[in-house]
Image (cartoon, rainbow, N blue to C red; front, side):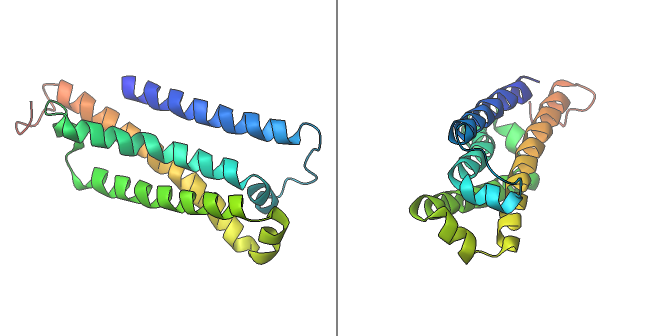
Length: 157
């Protein structure tokens, strides 16, 4: 449960930071509508930063676990590799979107992109969060299974 608590704390700081910036930007001039596309165009840098934050913890955690001789057994299996590969892909996508929205005018970007693209980015942001949570939940199960003698496999300590 320690890893789940660490992940939750890291995501809470990332979300609170994003919400603080959104509140700061909307304090004087509130947003007219609650459309997801307009929200993502207007707050693209914050959404990208949130996506990067969601994907960063599992990727760095897997790297540190894989490099530690006493915890490498927690990284075994193709599920972790696929999940972290997808999270790395999402990190690249969020970094590309961050660069795109920082270098462009929000109104011009909203006119240039189709609404489906904006909704797809919202889905990618949600998928990043779900994959990140799935990694942590699987890690907790693997550690629990490794500490329970009845479920322990003989191939690792």
